[in-house]
Image (cartoon, rainbow, N blue to C red; front, side, top):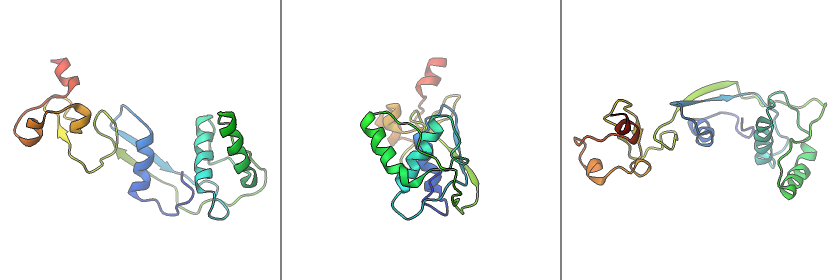
Length: 159
C-alpha cells in the first residue's frame, strides 16, 4: 500500500513481507488502490498513515486523509509517543492509478524472511525447510560439504 510507486515490483512486494512475521510458508501482499498524495514530499507520511490505519483495525482503501493536517498529526503523535489515526476529510481525493494486484511471497528460515539471495541449507528432516546458516546455527562442515546431512531443531526434537 505504498502510494508513491505507480508500478509495483518484486522488491515492493518483498519489503512488506519482511515486516510481517508469520509462521506460515508465505505472506500474501495485496496492492490496493489508496489515496494518492498531492506533490512529492509526503510519501513516508502516507505510508505511516496507511500502516497506522491498519493497526487501528480500519481500512486505508476507504479512508480519505486530510493531507494538509497530516504533518501536524505526525508531530503530535511523536511528541505524545502514541500513534493515533490521521485526520480524515469528506472531500473527494484522487486515488492511486496503479491496478489492484496481489502476490504471494514465500518466506523461509526461522527468521521468516523472503529469499534474500544469500546461502541457505535445506533440512534433511521431515520439514525440508530452507535455513540461513547463521539463523539456524548450522556448522561450517555442513555448509562446505553438501552431502553432509543436517536437520533443523524442530525435526531433531521430533525424532
